[in-house]
Length: 56
Image (spheres, rainbow, N blue to C red):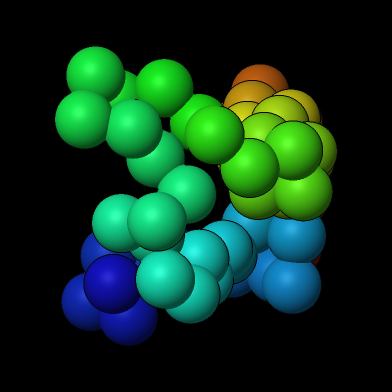
């Protein structure tokens, strides 16, 4: 990602520990905390790509 000068922040990265136990076989999120974290990640990522940092 450094090659394409990607700029990540704490809000645009997400680590889901034990993901197999938090997502059903059908792909539905079964853990409320994970769902909230994923929604925050998506919102932050969308903001990042629609309002890019003017410094780069």
